[in-house]
Amino acid sequence: MVAEVSQTFWAAMARGEFITGAAAEAGIYRQKGRRWLRESGGVRPRRGRDLKGRCLRFAEREEIAIAHAGGQGVRQIALGLGRSPSTVCRELQRNVEGAKSYRATTAHALAYVRASRPKAAKLATNVALRAKVENDLEKKYSPEQITGRLRVEFPNDPEMRVSPETIYQSLYVQARGALRRDLAVCLRTGRALRRPEPQGRPAEEPDPEHDQYRAASTRGGGPRRARKLGG
Image 1 (cartoon, rainbow, N blue to C red):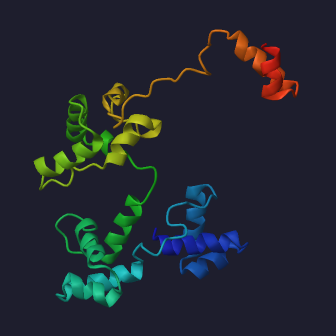
Image 2 (cartoon, rainbow, N blue to C red; image 1 turned 180 degrees about the horizontal axis):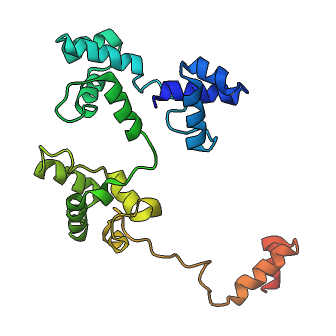
Image 3 (cartoon, one colour; image 1 turned 30 degrees about the horizontal axis):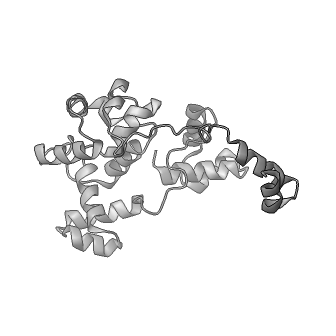
């Protein structure tokens, strides 16, 4: 189910079209449209809705497949598409099934599945990475230091990578809680602990002369009258 095709069908249904008209607009058969309705319970799927400009379209993947099969390099393909070379390189590396060559239909299906939500947290699925992060947290390393150490210790293993934000979320966000919560006490705040300041001014010993001056000032007598009252 290609996102561009299925979402065209669902957009037509949302406008009030019949199944036949929505299917014709999406370029599919009426029976396929009815199957989509039945499988989703009549609710429009969120995946693929309002695709952002940074996502490759199916037509762009077809152009990548043709150019790659013709022997063009990554930069040449990117120039023809108006995309970044890193985008094309990442596309050719990620969306290939096994040892097969790059195909637009397979790549689009793999990207569609990968973009689905919710995703499993990386620290929840990668046991070795989670053990390494927990061990470094017990050693009082900060998440930023852990990220840097992973790059140095595992330079050729992209699976042993994690961002500091992922570590923080795994400790504090319940939906991402793959790490042990007791490790949060190992984090350093980066500043000294703040001691609570005393509330209000400390009590002073009563000063009769000062109290007499203040009482005279509140009555409008001013300092001269206060001196008279003081003798």
